[in-house]
Amino acid sequence: MGLNTIFFAVLVLIFIVERLLELRSAKQNTRRLIEKGGREFGGKHYSWIVTMHVIFFVSLIVEFQLRDKPLAPFWVVPFCILLFAQALRFWARGALGDRWTSRIIVISGERLISTGPYRFLSHPIYVAVVLELFSLPLIFNLYITCAVFTIANAIILFGIRIPEERRALALSQISEIGKE
Image 1 (cartoon, rainbow, N blue to C red):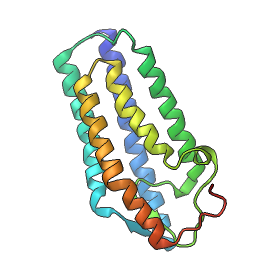
Image 2: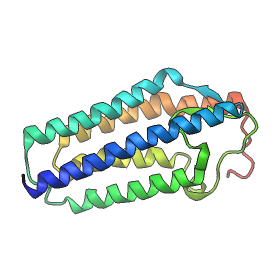
Image 3: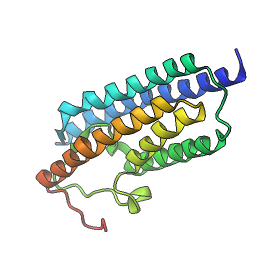
Protein backbone atom coordinates (compact mmCIF):
# COMPACT_ATOMS: atom_id res chain seq x y z
CA MET A 1 0.00 0.00 0.00
CA GLY A 2 1.52 3.30 -1.12
CA LEU A 3 1.60 6.62 0.69
CA ASN A 4 -1.07 7.96 -1.67
CA THR A 5 -3.45 5.16 -0.64
CA ILE A 6 -2.70 5.64 3.06
CA PHE A 7 -3.22 9.40 2.78
CA PHE A 8 -6.52 8.81 0.95
CA ALA A 9 -7.72 6.23 3.48
CA VAL A 10 -6.86 8.44 6.45
CA LEU A 11 -8.58 11.52 4.97
CA VAL A 12 -11.71 9.63 3.97
CA LEU A 13 -11.87 7.90 7.35
CA ILE A 14 -11.54 11.26 9.15
CA PHE A 15 -14.41 12.69 7.12
CA ILE A 16 -16.65 9.66 7.54
CA VAL A 17 -16.08 9.65 11.31
CA GLU A 18 -16.67 13.41 11.40
CA ARG A 19 -20.00 13.02 9.55
CA LEU A 20 -21.12 10.20 11.85
CA LEU A 21 -20.26 12.23 14.96
CA GLU A 22 -22.09 15.20 13.47
CA LEU A 23 -25.18 13.08 12.86
CA ARG A 24 -25.12 11.98 16.51
CA SER A 25 -24.71 15.56 17.72
CA ALA A 26 -27.40 16.77 15.32
CA LYS A 27 -29.83 14.15 16.61
CA GLN A 28 -29.24 15.23 20.23
CA ASN A 29 -29.57 18.92 19.39
CA THR A 30 -32.68 18.28 17.29
CA ARG A 31 -34.31 16.48 20.19
CA ARG A 32 -33.47 19.37 22.57
CA LEU A 33 -34.74 21.98 20.13
CA ILE A 34 -38.01 20.12 19.58
CA GLU A 35 -38.44 19.81 23.36
CA LYS A 36 -38.01 23.61 23.59
CA GLY A 37 -40.88 24.07 21.14
CA GLY A 38 -38.90 23.94 17.91
CA ARG A 39 -40.60 23.00 14.68
CA GLU A 40 -38.97 21.04 11.87
CA PHE A 41 -39.22 22.17 8.28
CA GLY A 42 -38.07 20.37 5.15
CA GLY A 43 -38.01 16.93 6.70
CA LYS A 44 -38.88 15.38 3.34
CA HIS A 45 -35.64 16.47 1.68
CA TYR A 46 -33.37 15.58 4.62
CA SER A 47 -32.94 11.99 3.42
CA TRP A 48 -31.73 13.33 0.05
CA ILE A 49 -28.94 15.23 1.79
CA VAL A 50 -27.87 12.22 3.85
CA THR A 51 -28.04 9.97 0.78
CA MET A 52 -25.99 12.41 -1.27
CA HIS A 53 -23.25 12.43 1.38
CA VAL A 54 -23.20 8.63 1.63
CA ILE A 55 -23.02 8.26 -2.15
CA PHE A 56 -20.28 10.92 -2.24
CA PHE A 57 -18.04 8.76 -0.06
CA VAL A 58 -18.87 5.63 -2.04
CA SER A 59 -18.09 7.46 -5.28
CA LEU A 60 -14.87 8.84 -3.84
CA ILE A 61 -13.69 5.36 -2.85
CA VAL A 62 -14.79 3.68 -6.09
CA GLU A 63 -13.24 6.34 -8.31
CA PHE A 64 -10.03 6.21 -6.29
CA GLN A 65 -9.86 2.43 -6.70
CA LEU A 66 -10.60 2.59 -10.43
CA ARG A 67 -8.24 5.46 -11.25
CA ASP A 68 -5.43 4.62 -8.82
CA LYS A 69 -3.53 7.76 -9.74
CA PRO A 70 -0.97 9.62 -7.67
CA LEU A 71 -1.80 12.81 -5.85
CA ALA A 72 -2.61 15.74 -8.08
CA PRO A 73 0.54 17.76 -8.80
CA PHE A 74 -1.24 20.74 -7.24
CA TRP A 75 -2.67 18.70 -4.31
CA VAL A 76 -1.51 21.24 -1.72
CA VAL A 77 -4.00 23.82 -3.05
CA PRO A 78 -7.16 21.69 -2.62
CA PHE A 79 -5.75 20.35 0.66
CA CYS A 80 -5.44 23.91 1.99
CA ILE A 81 -8.98 24.63 0.79
CA LEU A 82 -10.12 21.50 2.64
CA LEU A 83 -8.39 22.66 5.84
CA PHE A 84 -10.01 26.10 5.46
CA ALA A 85 -13.41 24.42 4.99
CA GLN A 86 -12.90 22.40 8.17
CA ALA A 87 -11.94 25.51 10.13
CA LEU A 88 -15.02 27.31 8.80
CA ARG A 89 -17.25 24.32 9.66
CA PHE A 90 -15.97 24.17 13.26
CA TRP A 91 -16.18 27.94 13.67
CA ALA A 92 -19.80 27.96 12.42
CA ARG A 93 -20.81 25.01 14.61
CA GLY A 94 -19.17 26.68 17.59
CA ALA A 95 -21.14 29.88 16.97
CA LEU A 96 -24.39 27.90 16.80
CA GLY A 97 -23.60 25.82 19.89
CA ASP A 98 -26.45 23.52 20.84
CA ARG A 99 -28.65 25.17 18.19
CA TRP A 100 -26.66 23.44 15.45
CA THR A 101 -28.42 20.58 13.72
CA SER A 102 -28.38 19.12 10.24
CA ARG A 103 -32.14 19.54 10.06
CA ILE A 104 -34.10 22.78 9.77
CA ILE A 105 -35.47 23.38 13.26
CA VAL A 106 -36.83 26.77 14.23
CA ILE A 107 -38.08 28.05 17.55
CA SER A 108 -40.50 30.91 17.00
CA GLY A 109 -39.20 34.21 18.33
CA GLU A 110 -35.56 33.11 18.60
CA ARG A 111 -32.97 35.47 17.19
CA LEU A 112 -30.75 34.38 14.33
CA ILE A 113 -27.15 33.78 15.29
CA SER A 114 -25.05 36.76 14.22
CA THR A 115 -21.70 35.90 15.78
CA GLY A 116 -18.71 34.01 14.42
CA PRO A 117 -18.79 33.48 10.66
CA TYR A 118 -22.51 34.37 10.66
CA ARG A 119 -21.38 38.02 10.86
CA PHE A 120 -20.10 37.61 7.30
CA LEU A 121 -22.07 34.74 5.73
CA SER A 122 -25.66 33.54 5.95
CA HIS A 123 -24.70 29.90 5.42
CA PRO A 124 -21.07 29.29 6.46
CA ILE A 125 -21.54 25.54 6.98
CA TYR A 126 -22.94 25.22 3.45
CA VAL A 127 -19.89 27.10 2.14
CA ALA A 128 -17.70 24.63 4.06
CA VAL A 129 -19.55 21.63 2.58
CA VAL A 130 -19.27 23.06 -0.94
CA LEU A 131 -15.53 23.49 -0.44
CA GLU A 132 -15.17 19.97 1.01
CA LEU A 133 -17.09 18.24 -1.78
CA PHE A 134 -15.01 20.16 -4.31
CA SER A 135 -11.54 19.96 -2.77
CA LEU A 136 -11.37 16.46 -1.27
CA PRO A 137 -11.72 14.69 -4.65
CA LEU A 138 -9.33 17.15 -6.34
CA ILE A 139 -6.51 16.20 -4.00
CA PHE A 140 -6.54 12.77 -5.64
CA ASN A 141 -7.48 13.67 -9.26
CA LEU A 142 -11.02 12.36 -8.79
CA TYR A 143 -12.66 14.73 -11.25
CA ILE A 144 -15.88 12.77 -11.81
CA THR A 145 -16.74 12.70 -8.11
CA CYS A 146 -15.77 16.36 -7.82
CA ALA A 147 -18.01 17.45 -10.71
CA VAL A 148 -21.02 15.24 -9.97
CA PHE A 149 -21.25 16.08 -6.27
CA THR A 150 -20.46 19.77 -6.65
CA ILE A 151 -23.42 19.97 -9.05
CA ALA A 152 -25.69 17.69 -6.97
CA ASN A 153 -24.96 19.68 -3.82
CA ALA A 154 -25.64 22.98 -5.60
CA ILE A 155 -29.00 21.68 -6.84
CA ILE A 156 -30.00 20.53 -3.35
CA LEU A 157 -28.75 23.69 -1.64
CA PHE A 158 -30.05 26.34 -4.02
CA GLY A 159 -33.09 24.48 -5.32
CA ILE A 160 -34.40 22.96 -2.09
CA ARG A 161 -32.54 23.55 1.18
CA ILE A 162 -32.00 27.32 1.26
CA PRO A 163 -35.51 28.13 -0.05
CA GLU A 164 -36.92 25.78 2.62
CA GLU A 165 -34.90 27.57 5.31
CA ARG A 166 -36.18 30.93 4.11
CA ARG A 167 -39.74 29.63 4.18
CA ALA A 168 -39.21 28.25 7.71
CA LEU A 169 -37.87 31.58 8.94
CA ALA A 170 -40.74 33.49 7.36
CA LEU A 171 -43.37 31.16 8.80
CA SER A 172 -41.76 31.14 12.24
CA GLN A 173 -41.26 34.91 12.34
CA ILE A 174 -37.69 34.60 13.52
CA SER A 175 -36.38 37.87 14.82
CA GLU A 176 -33.56 39.28 12.74
CA ILE A 177 -32.67 42.00 15.24
CA GLY A 178 -28.93 42.47 15.20
CA LYS A 179 -28.53 40.50 11.95
CA GLU A 180 -27.37 43.01 9.34
